[in-house]
Amino acid sequence: MKKSLVVLAALATATMMAVPASADETKMVGISMPTQSLERWNRDGAYLEEQFKAAGYDAKATYSDNDENRQANDIENLINADGADLLVIAAINGESLNGVMKEAVEAGIPVIAYDRLIMNDGTSFYVSYDNYTVGTLQGQYVVDTLDLDNAGDKVYNIEFTAGDPADNNAGFFFNGAFDVLKPYIDAGTLNVVSGQTEFDAVATAAWDEQTAMERMQNILASYYADGTQLDVALCSNDSTARGVTQAIESDYAGDNTVLITGQDADEANLANIVDGKQSMTVYKNLANEAVATLDLAKALLDGQEIDGSIIENAGWDFECAYDTESYETSEGHTCPSFLLVPTVVTVDNMVESLVDIGEYTQDEDGYLHPAH
Ligand code: BGC
Image 1: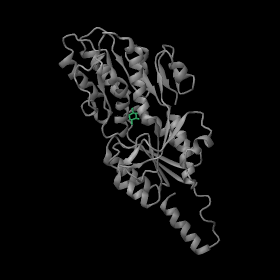
Image 2 (image 1 turned 60 degrees about the vertical axis):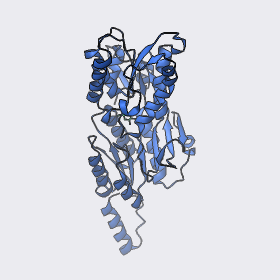
Image 3 (image 1 turned 135 degrees about the horizontal axis):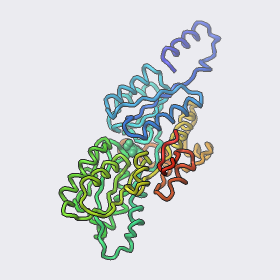
Image 4 (image 1 turned 30 degrees about the vertical axis):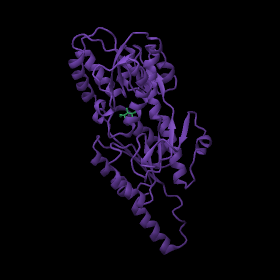
């Protein structure tokens, strides 16, 4: 709803008395995505915009080039110029939106934190995939594939690459993977040759591919140049996995295949999986994430009381948990969260998991391409 419409409606009501209280006003949903440079957010923005429009709302998606000031500015415009009645925000930096969050709260605009939590108590709800589980799936894949429980005296060398410290998700992904792998590190079955096991040491600013590549090149030059084998590169997502894969292709002296994990089913990474350069990716169906967001937004805009019952009532054909404990916007203040369930994609199940559900197509050479 545009401000000008509010004013007009108010004037009309005042002068004509009989005008119904803006009965047919179309609600406006402002969608703020972090960037177009990381593949998934293009799909998120498009799905959200499409689905809100199809449901009869006005909707506008903005992309902020991974620049947190620009995102604050974009959101400010969605509130003031576009007259947003509800905001859906995937934050670049979860800590940096306090100014616009204050404006939204004061204007009574509900805010759904989309995929990434906003560290502000004004956040109404959080819709995401279970981020900790994403990490555990990556860790468990390593345990199962290398059969670490039966490794005997064998030692596997591993390096970690995590995400952007400004993104609240990144710590969850890393902790999920690390918690699964730590017992094997403690037992000596996994050896982190660089010694870099703290999140801050392995993080990648802005989830940037090039940054991840350069860090891995340094590690390979410092610890693996003598032919020491690298067995596992645990990467939190596909953009970092691409950087690490390039570093391994150009700078790795060992002769074994390195097990590389990822997340997002980015097109280039699926090609790497087909080519045997990456082992797995964690898939999060973005169309489902958008559907959950849409149904929650509808309920919020209709002024409904919201709790976990929305999950049963909505009749979604995907799993989702209502979680009121895991995500804090400030110490002691939790944000009610709707968490969808991620899955593992490998070369063996990619057609069934991605093509058969209509989200990707497969070409004659076996490579997958996003269907939308
Ligand atoms: C998302 C991931 C994505 C990463 C970088 C995270 O917040 O949950 O799916 O890989 O951002 O875009």
